[in-house]
Length: 102
Image 1 (cartoon, one colour):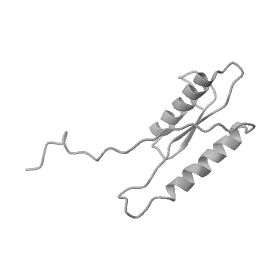
Image 2 (cartoon, one colour; image 1 turned 45 degrees about the vertical axis):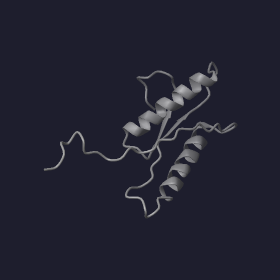
Image 3 (cartoon, helix red, strand yellow; image 1 turned 30 degrees about the vertical axis):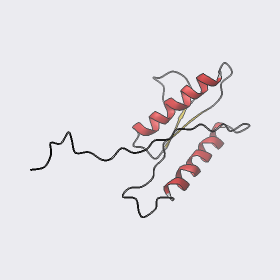
Image 4 (cartoon, helix red, strand yellow; image 1 turned 180 degrees about the vertical axis):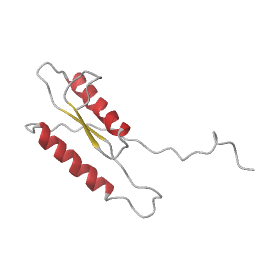
């Protein structure tokens, strides 16, 4: 008899978060850079893995009244938007309003 469904699950996937600051780069360039990175990471999936390596990227811009914390929070919210869209994609946030998704 198999174990109950609540016990059967995939092994946890490691999750690593980091931030990259791209000075003198506009939003479009940052989004293109993030998408190139996403594509290159996906291509790294070794045959020994049972699934693909994916990356969800949140992109934002430094607004005039931002401090580092505000900028990182907005980029983090964009990353969770990307995960909610099915992972392995890039999402953009240009406002701190949680109800506005670009």
